[in-house]
Image 1 (cartoon, rainbow, N blue to C red):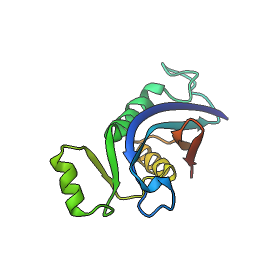
Image 2 (cartoon, rainbow, N blue to C red; image 1 turned 180 degrees about the vertical axis):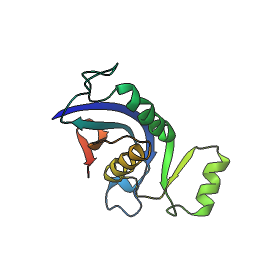
Image 3 (cartoon, one colour; image 1 turned 135 degrees about the vertical axis):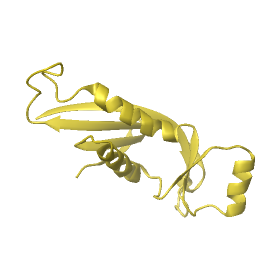
Image 4 (cartoon, rainbow, N blue to C red; image 1 turned 90 degrees about the horizontal axis):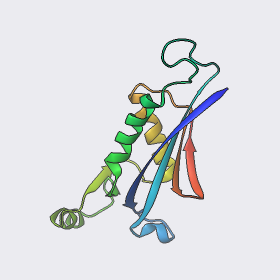
Length: 139
């Protein structure tokens, strides 16, 4: 089995409402996302001969996803009071509203699904919250 991987990253803050530890407070990460693609064989002809697939097919999609979250406060829908949201918007903070709890596990599945929607077929997606902590999703 051949495997290739591409990475992108974004800096963003989040919080986990109701978490019993420090993660209930707003805090940031340098999120690193790595998408893996595998194949039993390599492309046999053409300009991509000898490849699983061209990295140039993966990088734009992965970077688009990372750019959507970069330098934003990621907020799980319905976890902040409307008055808090209004105050943040009045201060021109950029928020990224998501319909999932913003954990590394949920980000891994979200990014996996987004890549599939973009016509790519990842074997797995790994999302790092830090250099030594990550979650991954595969079907």
